[in-house]
Image 1 (cartoon, rainbow, N blue to C red):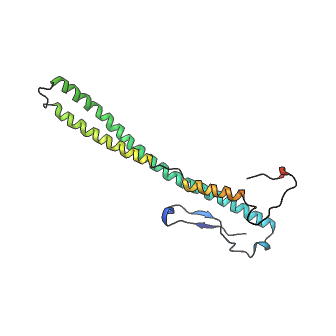
Image 2 (image 1 turned 90 degrees about the vertical axis):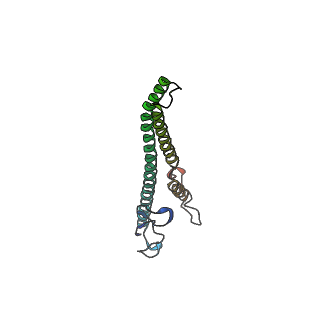
Image 3 (image 1 turned 45 degrees about the vertical axis):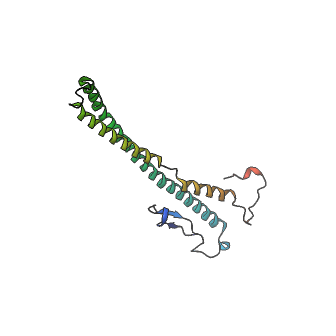
Length: 178
């Protein structure tokens, strides 16, 4: 039976990903594949398929986890903007009330300070809303997982090609397509 190794990406865009099981390109423990029994070959194939599925699930989990963290950070910025916006409302109402009360003739008396605070709160709320929108827009689909699942599906669909002939069953009902 073939030895199952573990791949770990440490360079480029795979940095920080957890170790996932991988299928070796060649049989490291036994001789030629012709010397193995059909039972061992089936056992190896099921082991490799199981390892491949586990690796795909682990890759999807790690990519989705990373994207969820980015989305959560963006939503925290939105919460901060909402809180500052709610804190802005009393200042805005107080400023409007004092401004209307005083009129334009005494216009810098007490409500000028309230206006400065109101504008400062508005700028802060706008800043955090902008940061939150940037963070949420940066959330992407797990592209590597999608590509590897497509590659795996294509490889399984075309497994009889490349010069190897697959046995043809007597009836079409005996074969279940993957």
